[in-house]
Amino acid sequence: MNTHVEKDECISCGVCPSLCPEVFEFDDDGLAMAKIEEVPEELEDLVQEAAESCPTSAIVVN
Ligand code: SF4
Image (cartoon, rainbow, N blue to C red; front, side):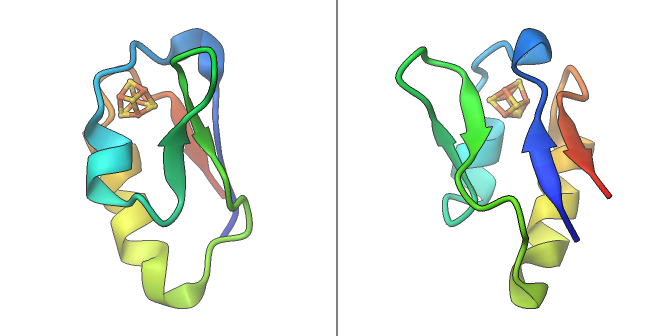
């Protein structure tokens, strides 16, 4: 699984870094980013949950 954040869509709500800090963090601009774009298998469920929980659907998984 790969993931990234469409920064244009992020509203800095904090859900994704709270749910999965191993993958998501706030960048210097205050918007979320994926620090690991190639998601380890053990984190896939959390990343999926973060994507589904993002209020603006800014997290892309594929
Ligand atoms: S859950 Fe979505 S809107 Fe909230 S910080 Fe993460 S990417 Fe941004």
